Image (cartoon, rainbow, N blue to C red; front, side):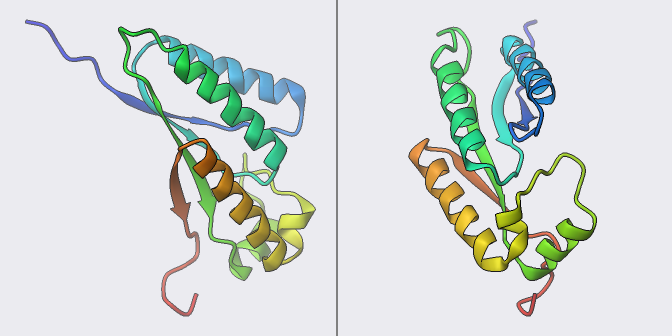
Length: 141
């Protein structure tokens, strides 16, 4: 009896500030993709638009190199709603692995500009978008 192999989703963080951290992350992603079981790659949230565009180019190249016998993986980018609460929290105690720049952290307007540009990039590369709203529990938030 043949078993259907599992289909898994993985995370990828292209926003590591140092080259070594990024290279290790990229290698881990390539190892995961080599299994042929990855159906979706979630891109971690971060504020460096150049790194995001570069990661999207790399992922679409890897996507098109998927052998015909394997299922092509989808790409999903995550964005955070840039609320005052989120910005204050990330300034005071940033989450591990979330790399935000001064423009994002300086004001809701700067954060909103970056998030809108991210959404345009994700749209340009035909990515699904996961909108996260940490700290938003009601309309008032």
